[in-house]
Length: 464
Ligand code: FAD
Ligand code: NAD
Image (cartoon, rainbow, N blue to C red; front, side, top):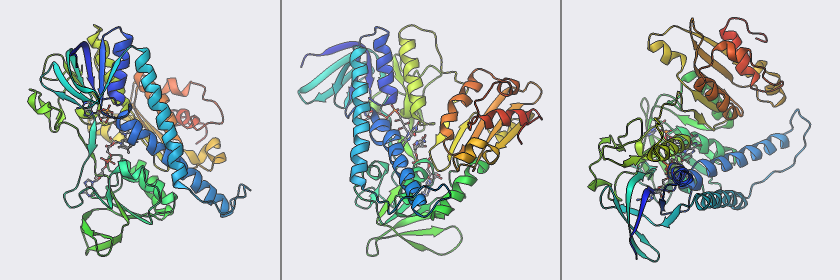
């Protein structure tokens, strides 16, 4: 096939890569995107979108069961049941619509999409084996956006009953018993969903509590809900391996004897690692940061005109970070003066209840020796939350003492993921507590708890 040359070559069609390519195309740069799978990467095909679809279905099913058991609301439902293959068909339609949408946006931005796995020969040349033959592409700028892959445990290699999130998102039946190894983001989001769908769920976590990446105050309502749902939780526990004869997982708590956990499926969710082996990356002279490609504040790697964005650059491995980096790199290549200087990257965990964290926690700020004021407002005192049977949780605001500049905002509660936008906006705009307290928040909304928490931090809460 004819060799190709372009200004910008993007490797990877996930949120980092496709956003970078769209932006580069919009800026008039001759851009080629190489993607081996359906556009959208992990996020759209086997990550954010299918997991949130499954969580939504599980929540709706759980609600139907709640009503069937006789609820105070007066809603009557009888014998709800779930057809997971219909759920999968619905979810697949959403993914297809979104992926087709990405293809349309790339077309409109005049980006050439080449289907196949890109193999880098050097920092300017890439080979792609496509359905119609090998293609050689040379580029002035190469953007590496190859994403990440699930971590495997040596004692529980993937295969047969041991699955990663990818398989967990395409099961055709709800497993009778699901053992989840790793009680972090994926383990808890999917573990809770499968429990609501009817599986017996056991979570095995090495740390001393679930979701150890969030502070204990935030995770307490999630742990309580997991227990209420009937999820068995083993913290400070090691997963030893499978006992195939018994179809069970052997585990060993740090104190106590070995236990056997019934496990038709074992979902291993102990983290993800940047996809930095293969694809010719070893042949490049890239500085690494552990397993991740090291980058600076402009997403430059150690090689001139070779850029890296998204999960391949390490934590936090979040789709919105990848997208922001993708847009940034396209702008810089087009000659704009930019740097990744975000005040905060929001973290949202779509558990029941949901968790949002934007900026540092009070403990983290205190640890830096800064003096702070904090305000916490519980959803139990919020009218909207009461009308939605969503009284669990709170919003917490941390500000610098004296100037009242807001430094960090966390929340736990039903649907708080949607509040992350106003939390981030407040931080990016350098809001002070007085700004939030003086902003009219519509009534009745859960957002009022943000205003009230700010007022409490100022020492004059109105409703609590
Ligand atoms: P990816 O989305 O991984 O895309 C990389 C792409 O590059 C892939 O399509 C891959 O096939 C391709 N590729 C690999 N090698 C090559 C090559 N040599 N040539 C060309 N292409 C190549 N994040 C959130 O922010 N919110 C969430 O709710 C959320 N939920 C998640 C749920 C699950 C179950 C999982 C697994 C992840 C979730 N994430 C979530 C994380 C999110 O999916 C990632 O942070 C995001 O997809 C990273 O985007 P990326 O573009 O860096 O990489
Ligand atoms: P994670 O880092 O969130 O959680 C892994 C958990 O496994 C941790 O609690 C850790 O202590 C535990 N662990 C590690 N080794 C263990 C072992 N041997 N036995 C038992 N427990 C062990 O990782 P994940 O859940 O696999 O998710 C991977 C990444 O995907 C996340 O870090 C995040 O970047 C992204 N993600 C984000 C979202 C979201 O934004 N809502 C959702 C899903 C995934």
